[in-house]
Length: 291
Image 1 (cartoon, rainbow, N blue to C red):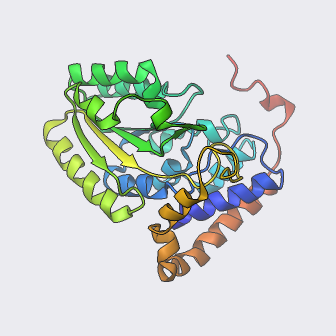
Image 2: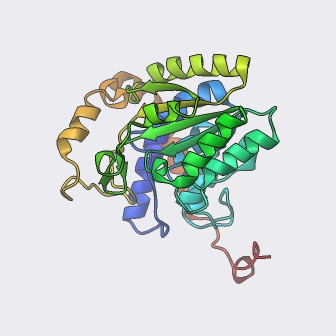
């Protein structure tokens, strides 16, 4: 969690300075989910959406390659061509976002269908629940009893739209209609609570190999896309931020953070320095991935 938070803070600084040209989707405030899930699902196929830095780092991705990717360098994990929303890395079995909200969910279901011996975890936000392809995928996974875990990181927002303005149903109740086992975890700020809940799900999953759905309540600290704040934009208040921060272990446990951050910050500084001194792509790279 420390590493993800401080990496994202450095990304925000680099973006503010104009070093990063692509849109950035930061995980600040949501670090505990990917961290906890990675503790029990390393080696699984993971499918993520645009806010995927946390999953990439938690599941063993290289922070140097991620920083290079954000700067658009050929040494990035996607050759500098994916940027922040499209992080992928076959070395850690991570299949990322391609552009449309929720489009990775049926791809994850396809992986569970085509490679039933693998464990598959699919991360998405509450905004993806608005998409028709999400419902079709949940139905298909249930109908064919596919080995996949769906993880809804519910931060209550789809860009600037609240969940109350978008959904006439409760996510966890609606999923149960499809006959899928469901779990709700409101303590998304608490690494150990998420780990405890998710460990139980994975234990059951190993036995029955049936689909499971977990909704985890969380909160993003910065704006939907970018490094700034959005508490004066009229759609959410700073009181909500402070309520979440009052339970944030990276705010409360200063001793623990102080123990880890010197090493983490040095690693991140090294990654930034390497990225900023690496060569830019040449003309020959422009069409290198075009068939």
